[in-house]
Length: 588
Image 1 (cartoon, one colour):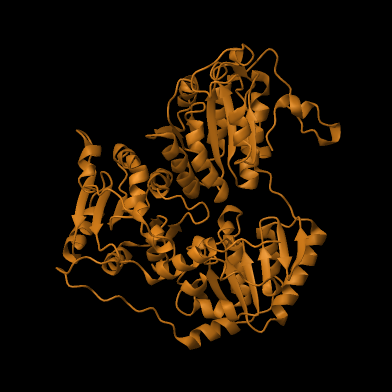
Image 2: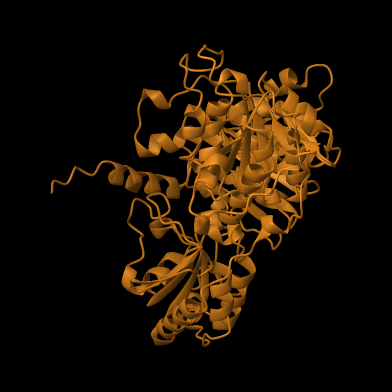
């Protein structure tokens, strides 16, 4: 969906978008960098993340002129993109600024994650001087070829819109086009700005309304889809609702709750939709994850006659190696722009609009909720370990549970932290963040940094394994720099436990670090981060109290446990994902 202004001009008139005329005398003009800053501020950004490089230095200067946004620095471009991804989770959108090629290619990893996770992250890259484009000479930070368009071509595959500015007059149109696409499709966008154009003059930003266009469903398709779904739910003896991860991105959380209240049946959530439906709601039955679902939840969902899945994402992870994919004959799948009922597709229908319309039509049927209540699947409250007993995973989780209140956001890293987090009980108002589609180990540390920047006043708790931490540990120093009181529970079991459960080998072993001690390195002379180590329950309880009372920076609590101490859910999930990976090739 990438474009340049010239490409837009060559389209047939009926397909062409309106291009604002250039103000040739630049009356009331601004600069391209200032125009971009204004637009980012107008869409609700109070921060943007950055790593400096010679192709973006003037752009960073221009962005700094906007005093309503703060420039937040990261240790490297991978962390920068994941920090922006975390900020978008808290704030709805985000931006990060990097340099050409050596910066952007690293940031593309996090941008791919934002695409997979439906987050509008705007990646802005400085690029070579426009005079170099046709000068037939080589440049630094490039592949050593005369093709300087490869970065734009790459960006096209991981964004909903990628634009490269080559003339000042086209900058407002292309910037708006990229930002509008990101907000509309809930996907990342890419903007490339040459280093000699960041301070070039362009027209001032016009009205903002066009950036927030709300699409409307086709009335006939909406009516037909609601009728088909309502009929399917009415004929189902046991219907169930399933909250999916796209509910938040596409504005459907409130509408989904209204539908749940209207029908009165059991409500489950996919793991990457945890906290999108209140866990203390009387209809909530737990997390659906096939054979490793919450107690009683899997049986209710699997035996349902109709499953309305709102904003779902069915992949090999969320279906436990394809063992928990709902059958199409009983599935009502509500996607962001279409609805499928028993294999029949209705297009041009938007998720929240459909859920609202269905809530006004559907008949009440609490059968699956009554079934769940009869099963009496009450969670077993974990026992308190002896204070001096060696620390266990269960004791860590018991103590973390006590830290979570209605103002807490719990972020969990890929690995057993997923399952430990999914087993946590969240009070209403608490939030949960997981990256289950992209599944990049190391995501959580910079994402937690970005989330904390975007959600001041919330208690931010991170559960991360030692192997994942080693990939992106540097961003803890930025938490120290900004005095963010993040609480990090680092589980030290000396390896990649999730990989062990999928397929073990010597490559799952890592070099141990002094994780608690590394905080003194990050603190240097002026930081106030704390590093603590817990080997038993008493030490962990003391560390938790210190963390809760420390507001001048992050607290990292290194929790040492046995290498084989992991959840039953991880072991079973890992074995089924491994079986899916190992399927022999089918010959046609």
